Image 1 (cartoon, rainbow, N blue to C red):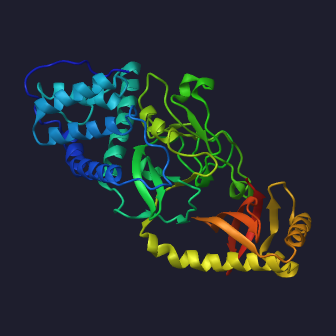
Image 2 (image 1 turned 90 degrees about the vertical axis):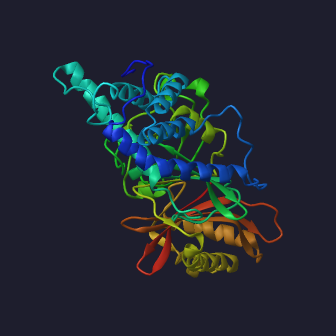
Image 3 (image 1 turned 180 degrees about the vertical axis):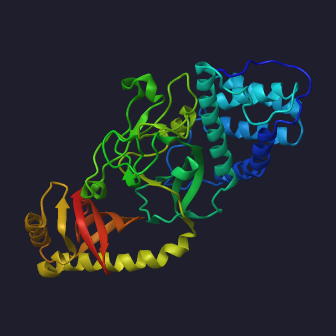
Length: 431
């Protein structure tokens, strides 16, 4: 939907109050964002990184150019801001915020603007509809600027990532309060933030509970597959990455529904309003394409949080070590075939991936312990992801390999803190 026509003319006035205010906020954000991108791009990629980014991808460029328009407007460079806005709108004709910036910069020549997207008060059904679209665009612009202005400190990571195996070459975290998705690379030195993008969530917000509630789930998830865009409707844009909602924690809480994807937008739409999906996470197609060409299904975690808490990696070392001691005690009990001690690590409400209760699962554990025949059990490629809300949960993934064996099953466990004790309430083989 084009809200304003293109035009040329004299230097635009700088009395577009909200546009300038957004620009002043965006100026340092623009600088910090691009400094971070340049640093990430100039750092040699370790061997664990994915294939190089294809040269034709244009992720993040439209937003960066919009921030530059705001910055120029704030500095009183109306002519330059207009030229940049028109260029952006030509390159991305479906980017409504670019169209809006063009219109405001043109309108500012004739009269002072009271707000971003300044149009007469609605007096007809059509103008009421336009006003609603403008409100959504203002919210989108505000979310983009606020997220870039309040960037996480360099070197920090979301607190959920206690440890990530090298098998997980990338990770994703979503801050719903900022409409922001963060993409990390798992390097030899730990997680490195390589890109972040504006993302839309459910029409009714977050914390999905039941099917059809138009909310985006909160929790620790994993990308399960990569869907071929040729098999999808245009509505999903460049493609889709389903996640494993409902996960075992969700299921234990009686949550229902499914079909939660990371996906793009239809060809005539660059981005969606912050709250506009049926529960999926939606990105602009150029941004989603970067993710599609980067992440790996099955091994890429996706943390979706109401608000991310960023911490220095060393600050989670104590939590990681404390839990690792518990996991090692579980491993030792299984190695020694001490069934009484081994079963003490399992919650009474335990369910396996095959829906087996603890009484039946104990037979599986006993058979696995006998199969070790005294060999020590090793846990390889461990990942610990912690989720804390009304309860404390640890999502653990590892390869279970007996001494002398080359391979073994990849397992995922969900542990819950019950009082002072960690207990397993779900366990299953994932590979």
